[in-house]
Amino acid sequence: MAEPLCNAAVKKCKETMPQTPIFSSMLSSSCSGQVQPDMGEKCGDPVYQDGNLISGSLEALIERLVPTMDYYPDRTYIFTFLLSSRVFIHPHELLAKVGQICIKQKQQLEIGSEAEKTKLKSFAAKIIQLLKEWTETFPYDFQDEKSMKELKEIAHRITQCDEENGTVKKIISQMTQNLLMTLSARSQYQEIKEKFRQPVTDKGTILKNKPQSTQKDILSICCDPLILAQQLTHIELERVSNIYAEDLMQIVSHVDSLDNHKCRGDVTKTYTLEAYDNWFNCLSMLVATEICRVVKKKQRTRIVEFFIDVARECFNIGNFNSMMAIISGMNLSPVARLKKTWSKVKTAKFDVLEHHMDPSSNFCNYRTALQGAAQRSQTANSNREKIVIPVFNLFIKDIYFLHKMHTNRLPNGQINFKKFWEISRLIHDFITWKQVECPFEKDKKIQSYLLTTPIYSEEALFIASFESEGPENHVEKDSWKTLRTTLLNRA
Image (cartoon, rainbow, N blue to C red; front, side, top):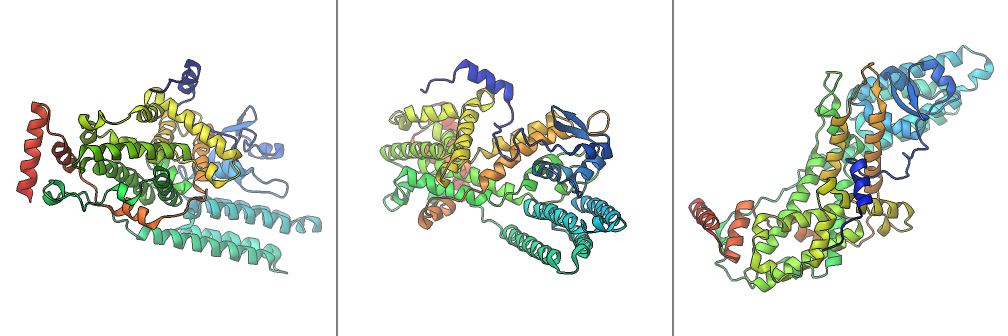
């Protein structure tokens, strides 16, 4: 068994939970979204603490989003506000308000002196930059006609600032084209309904009344734990690449809204999140299936030890999600009850893995490992060292916990922006990690097996488990009898 973390580390984990560790990034402490002093005088009511914006009215926060001749919002502020704004206002409504502010500033410059009029091009460039960041970071905000209409309206107004050489018009045209391509690609992904593997329940497949010599197992497809871990990482990164920041924000906007109106998150599909969660469950069930369906104890032992090594390689890579799925599969009751098999397994490595995933102190050990992987990623020179794939269901719980522990608005009615800084840090880290290009060569044969080979239902796993190692007590005997009778009658 691995040595436990020191008491100081455990205490620190307890104090900083539930959120996953935050590291220097675009959302570091030096990037607070702080605005120019003259902007503070204009808006009046935002509240700062240690130089960081912690609350403000929706109107004031929107005004701080829009550039002026002498001001451009910090990128971290843009990301955090656009991410959190959907809890309070529809994207198309926010675009309309941004457009109104732009028109007002444009008119002021037009009626000013000639010197101010020449500043129009500079002002237009800043507005375009804001729209560019918005469309690239949150493209799904523009999926409906209302949002696209507002975007085109702002673009039309800004184009008038540079009608002579048409530079602004060209930039806006390219931005719009890129946005439409992104939306089209995502629409195609959502339309492709993933063929979720249906658990096997056929009695001929489960009941071991057929020769096992021709039956394929994972070792016949891949006998190298590192290679399998790399292929699992390929699958993970491919799936997370289709998850956007606004998808993750639905965890907040879909749960509730203090503004008592229907937010966009209530009507947006969560297909990508569901598909990724389904992958975790399928991998866990695949591991259990591979173990339980083998007749010979020696071969079962080999497969158990193989998956332990695969999980270990996943840990070394930084693929914590696959690692957790594999451990979960081996901890399912049909696998855990195979005492004769486990007695032959060298469990020292498995004990270390379970130590890393120990749920005590809110998975403190795992979070320490995740922090190490994230720090490695920041200083890495190769994509191999940049890989960080967190345990997705724990990541989701962290966001949900932050949301439920802190109100969206303060007693004075202002938006609790400090809460959304914290949530945006979590989401930004995830978005950064998902953009890493997988450095491992793709093996279609191995991936096909992982994604399409039949997996057993929970019921089928128990039947296969009892056939591998018979029931040991009256409870198991009764369960085995009931399961076998049910299956035979169903067939």
